[in-house]
Amino acid sequence: MASTGLCVQMRLISLVAVVLASAALVSAHGEEMDKTGTLPEDAPFYKWPDEPMGWALKVHLVLCLIAYVVILPVGLVMEVASHRYQWLAQLSGAGIAFLGIVFGWVHGHLGNVYARYGWFMLSLLAQQTATNLGLTLDAVPRNKKSQLFYRMVGAMQLVCTYVGMLLGGIRFLNLCSQGHLGQCVSHFARGSALIIGAVCILVCMRVFGAIIVELRRPLELYLSIIMILVGAIGTFTEHNFFQTSDGDSWSHKDLQHTLIGVSWFAGGLLGVLMTCRSHPRSRNPIPSLIFIATGIAMITHQQDLVMASHTHFLFGAALVCLGLSTIAEITLLAAGFVKDHDQPALFQFVPVFFMCASGMFLMGSNRDMVLFLINSHIDVATYALILLSFCFVIMFYFYVLVDLYFALAGPQPAKYRVLEQHADRQSTSSQTSTLNHSDSHSSLASAAFV
Image (cartoon, rainbow, N blue to C red):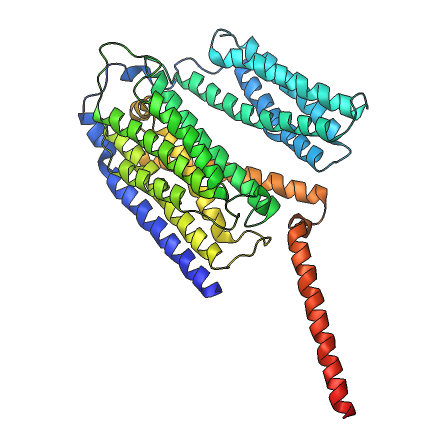
């Protein structure tokens, strides 16, 4: 069985090598062809800002990264682990975050979306800090509801921090403008859904075990629900749904992207119907088949710019690798290669990485970002390496947070606990083996007496 798993892993590695080599060969002439091609009229607008980054904005970035990426997530992990000093991390993180938001306002430009989003982040931070102080000072009764509320606010803080980073990058590079809001929302929303889904799977596998029995249903049920949401977003946003004029005409690109949204929505409904009553070990290949079909469509998908075709090729290659690696994982799990509460095998992290990479490539293939790459003379290979580096950083970040939780909560093997039904089965089997053992001893004794 171990040799079979090793063989499958080697085949996956070979497949990834072939796909990446193909991407490098296809991208060899990308920059040259974009130079000779005709760029849109608004192409010069997407470039690196001429205005230098002021000192207030630099201080804002440093303080917010320290608070929202380091201190506050560590405080949330300490709260989940019931650590007695978690209030210290919460208060210090809240103070640094408040100073960071103030320095962002000092920089000016208070009328943009990113500056207005700071008010929402400040209100969420105040609510989280007030709840924490209430629990620490016993002003709020410490029960399951209050602790659950605080942890949900902390988890929402992580998601909102990610959204704030996206808005900051979009504002700094002047993306999602010039009449392409719908296309930008579609790429960033669907890509973010894939990245957040990969992070949730990574955390659940490390906390609950390889099969994630605590979810009570197969993982594909939740993937199908995400596909329904992503498909609905893609269906109504690819053809400039939010900014439609009478002169807009459907192109093959709009039609393909919209039909991909429809296929994800319909496939997600099918996946939900097939897995809503299944056991967690009864995995389903429907989401993987949707990934492979979408990836093939994106690999053959042609854009008006060569750079755009190459970024969509990277997205499609990541989706195909995601679908194939997930099918390999389902096959190995169905063969009993991994038990219910075992630690996740190394090959199970391969689909998680490709899900994160596909989301990153999808966000990076929007039209405004492609024009920015052309104007900045960045080729697709460099761009792919940058996005893959972000994927590794994201996985490393949450892997460290889970390790911190295990270090604070107790010994690492305790996370793979046995559910009551499995404990009953084990106790029944142990009692049966004990009875059989005693019967064999009695038969041996009677034989010796005779």
